[in-house]
Image (cartoon, rainbow, N blue to C red; front, side, top):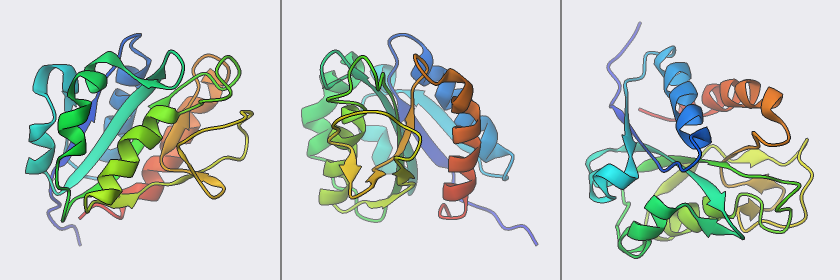
Amino acid sequence: MKYKMDKIGMFWGSTTEMTSLAAELIQEALESFDHHVESFDVGSTGVDPILTYSNVIIGCPTWNVGELQDDWDMFYSEYQGLKFDGITGAFFGVGDQLGYSCNFLDAVGLLARPFVENGGTLIGQWPTDGYDFDESIALEGDKFLGLGLDYDNQETLSEERIKSWTELIQSSFK
């Protein structure tokens, strides 16, 4: 028996289109599980609409040397002040584990940590197996705080990782 699920709000920023591509694939995969996903470029919407959803997915590439992508960076101080009580959230990020091995997926950590600290329920932690990097603030134990994608060095693994991750998180969204 199918039941009506709340909408999922997906908020992402993208400079080179890799994160927007990942967002499209994540949306398609979740919709195959009968979830309704509304996708937003945070550069156009800002961060306030995040609070209108009980289920969110947040995506951001790590830019330069461990920085947020420009759209997220523009709203970061506002984002850090949001109260995420009652919101279930999953995070994904795009990075270059070989070229920037000392800060691979740092943007995921920069966004996921305030989400949890401000009352959000984190889902979708992802194992580090199969990645080759030195450091990341997105690490908690032996897992990333969200899905890690590397279109520069492991593009062929991205679709399978997205498929596996969406299977992992989809049942946690109500």
